[in-house]
Amino acid sequence: MSKNIFREVIPLTSRDCFLIFSRSKTDFNFPVHNHDAIELNLILNAAGAKRVVGNHEETISDKELVLLGRNTVHGWFKNECKSDNIKEVTVQIHHELLSDEFLKRTPLSNIKRMLENSESGVAFSPETIDNIAPRLLALAQKNSFDSIMELLSIIHQLSNSHNQRILSNPLDTAKVVKMNNTPIERIFEYINIHFAQRLTLEDVAGAIGITPASLSRFVKMSTGLTFTDNLNEIRLGHVSRMLIETTHSISEVAFECGFNNLANFNRIFKKRNKCTPGEFRTRYFGQRTFI
Image 1 (tube, rainbow, N blue to C red):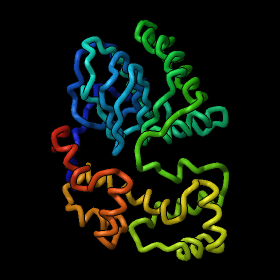
Image 2 (image 1 turned 180 degrees about the vertical axis):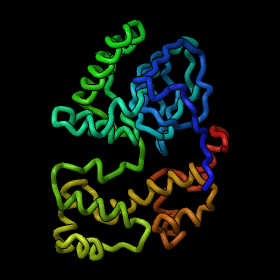
Image 3 (image 1 turned 90 degrees about the horizontal axis):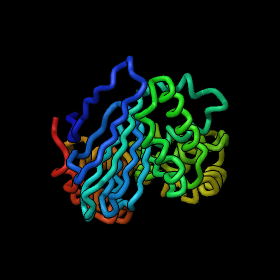
């Protein structure tokens, strides 16, 4: 399976905690890419630029703060931005600084949840940006130990902030709906494992050990979507990733992700993404490097 996005090799080693880049610029000229670090990106004075995270695209305002998980596909582009004084602060964090072993402690549960969501990209509210931006702008001026403590404090504040917004369409429904509700966790764990198979409400209910009516009620109450809509969301998330990351044909992608009727797949995809699968894939050809 060949990768069709630019894989950035960053100068962050196992001996580093994080790297910070603070710069003024007139343009965005780096292709859609991913890398092994967790990334916190502050962008100021770039209203009209376009942000791409996974299969989500959006025009940004004059202040932007986004947290990106490891290997999350992302990029920013000039688009309609007229500013020639863009300010960007990028913090690339070694994943071992925020390891699962560290984050499993109860006081860190909000940070753990935020980092799980960051695999789909998390955007923060203007109010949060106003509070955090001065600290990020000053972070590079602190000495080594103080900078680590300040970064952890910033991450903690972000994890407790209001109006966090998950960006990428794949939603990762199992993560979004986790609320200590064991049946729901089991339902979505099963769907995420078996999404590529023919899957009915009755199939999942039987595997989980509850009635189809109970499963339908649990899912609708927890997500606001029907069982079928949730299943399609999970499948479409995998479709979008394969369209970006592989050279498989559209029909191959559809079938590998559980859509057995190509016409139905095209209809569902276009309704969800406002474009055809072919149009979606074409968007990325001018923005990625094949390796």
